[in-house]
Image (cartoon, rainbow, N blue to C red; front, side, top):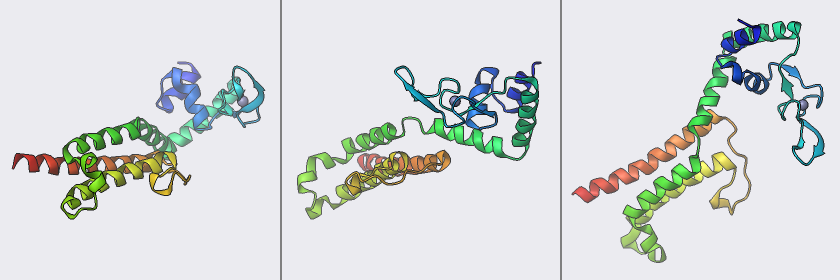
Length: 194
Ligand SMILES: [Zn+2]
């Protein structure tokens, strides 16, 4: 087994994915072309992205000594929990795919049952309080996801706030938002059966 394959197996990644994992975990060597910034002089194809490291700022070592040193660093992160935390983050990022679309789809499915879109002009009439309450739960849920994933909230006139950086925290916000909307849908469907 080549040392690259060994390192890939320590880092729990395919040999094809090794370069990216090493760069993202910043376990390789600082890219000599861009000194780790990921940026180099502007060109029409890559913009100012460094073509040697593809913007990562960190590259696989190219000689045996460098690879041995990388293997040692890989063994450390595999044992001290850094690798597991990184992989959990990657998994959470995958699970967050299309977050905004999923929340909006769920909200629209509730809207069809709730009928807020039909009463919104008369939303402040007391007989519509329950529809308004259910709509507000969906708005709140969608807004929390917006804020966490993009840093923008419809409540603050799209003023830029700070987004949630940690993918695991973002996933928890997405899951709680989807659960809130699902609960509204469930209550509407239960109501229909009565
Ligand atoms: Zn570079």
